[in-house]
Amino acid sequence: MAHLRVPPQADKFGKAALHVACERGFARVVDVLLAFFERYPGKERSDLLHGVARRSPLQLAARFDFLGIAKNLVAAGARVDHASACDGRTALHVAARFESVAVAQLLVDRGCDLSPRTTCGRALTPLHVSAMHGSSRVAHMLVTRGCNFHGPDRNDPPRRTMTPCDLAIACGHRRMTRNLIEEAQHVRRRRHAELQEIESAYVRKLHRVKKLNRDRLIKLRHLGVAESKCESAARKSRVSHVAQHGGAGRATSAATSEATALLSRGATPYTPKFTASSASSGRRSSTASSANSLMGGGGLAGLHPALLARS
Image (cartoon, rainbow, N blue to C red):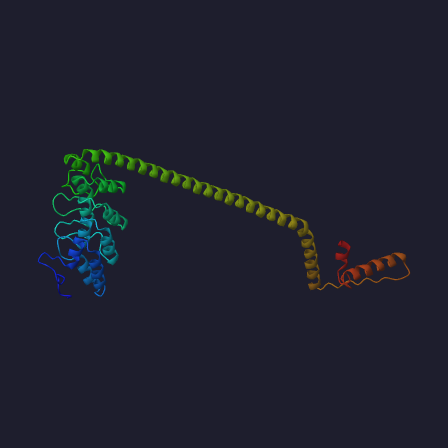
């Protein structure tokens, strides 16, 4: 069976049992056949669901508005955008031609293409077909879903010159044309209001983002100013500390270096001798002993008399 292009039990037009059941509305036969097709792999099951006839089973169900059969076919794996090999018509074209509103609504809800074009003639869309044949309800549904009723779309081929509105007027469906024009204007106003609302929401969000960025820059600027103030205060504190304590340290280090130089030249350390007989000598000895005790027991004893006199 994998080598057969035509399913078994098909007539000379390519119609199988599933085509006949969908055309006659035999829902139970359709269910039995779909359950039987489950045993085949994907490619063969797809061929059985669509067939090689002029119209697929889903298109036949759309022609006679058999909603239950159409639902079962779509649930079994039938493609809603399947186009005939002979003229490129889809199930939505057939539903628009015969005004099968329920099946058309099902196809639209399942995500079918709203503007497929036929491959023969003037490349008609389902809206053209409904406007030509006076299918006002299907045309109203398509216009409500966003199909263009007044002018050509961007993807329209150059060979098609008539719009759906022109076709409806040319075919004498003036009341339907008037209603569709009003509906198209209502859809256009609604879309314009939606676009304005989207634009205003975008502008509000943009202003909010700008305000947040501005506040962030202000905070960063204040933080930089605070850091610079802290750095300047720390620098001033270091300068004042050096000014207060740096002079005494330099004097002590200079005296120590001078004493070391004298000792290195061979100077004799001066050791004062005090007697107890003179009061002045006693005062000097007490002063020297207190100085020695303060300097760690002999800090002044080893210094030169010149340095002691200078100090």
